[in-house]
Length: 120
Image 1: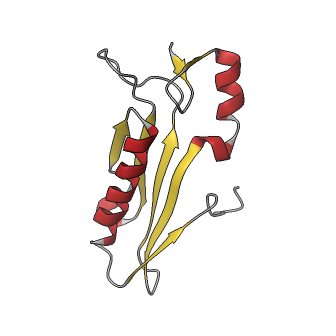
Image 2: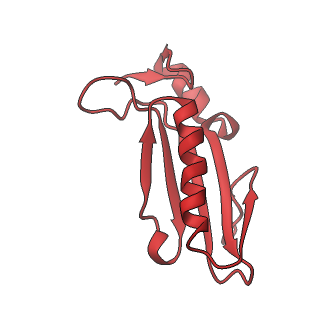
């Protein structure tokens, strides 16, 4: 298994485990896209994966954007990237795509996952 830091530098398993335990290090972006009446709420999450997800060779794939929520976006979309810059751009693009489907949307950058059902 090939582990890398956010800059694409190889790291050992112990370092990867330490970084994976740091939510702030893992999080690239977390954005809530909600309708004014909150009948639709989507979370766009972009994270550092640490482990290379490029299974066909070439540049390591280290970041992932996913959309969580209801309706057409319910855990449906996933995009992966090699660099943090690509991940940041991809996060913004995904927020724009999701927002276009939400009437009277409110877009909020979140510092951490919202609590649901007592989970943190």
